[in-house]
Image (tube, rainbow, N blue to C red; front, side, top):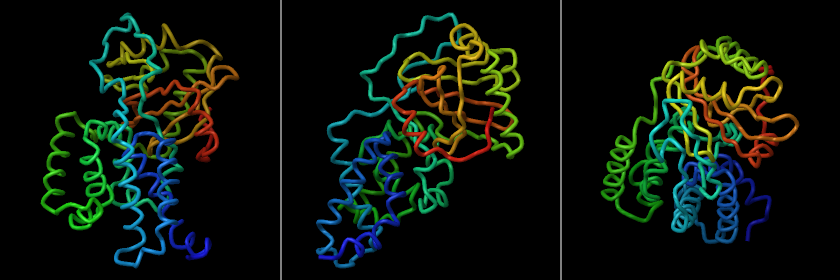
Length: 318
């Protein structure tokens, strides 16, 4: 039996990327953390039997992927409101009541995706963006595993076949079906122009200032014409600048109501949100140049500690 130090030395360098992998599979940071803990427990118990027939990293991915597939046998997909129905284009439309019983997709702190995560190199930001994680929820568990292992983590077909204990032909077939299903589900990688740092900071500062002053007019130039806004656990979502601005002006913006603390989520700018002194949720923005293409407001106070404890240091946006 190896010592704890020997086991940690060989396995701990991969914890961050395994956590990101389990998050892509499950759509929940909390579930991903549980599965990574289970992965390391299984690895510890089986380390004596690991004889170096593959790399430690690949062996850990096999354990983690198997654990995720088993977990997904008893769990439903984690949707976003935009995955359940069409948007409202009139801000006067009635807003459906919250659906706390739905297991919604969760955002993930940027610090979850450590420097060791190959997606940061291979898949770039597309591998962690909310749109991509949400699209994965439309795939079967096995298709999800094949697509993330091949297209995000860049494992070879024969390596994926070994991880999943199947054939290369079966992997290629599942990959084709997964890619086709993603196409049917809608675009998962918008043609977005990443702003430079100065433009980004100015945009975020103006956004926070508009909320602080409850100034809907100040948001007009910040939002793309086809901007969308969704607010899990509320199923209703809005598309188009008039609808989003109308909803914000009528239901959200009040002077000095909101406090935004900068953070990062899914490779995108985000804020931990408090209403007064009370935690309210996490807001994630999708940027396109000097405009905001999507506002995703996760109005769940339980997410605040998750981001507060992992906050990414950055200059204040307010």
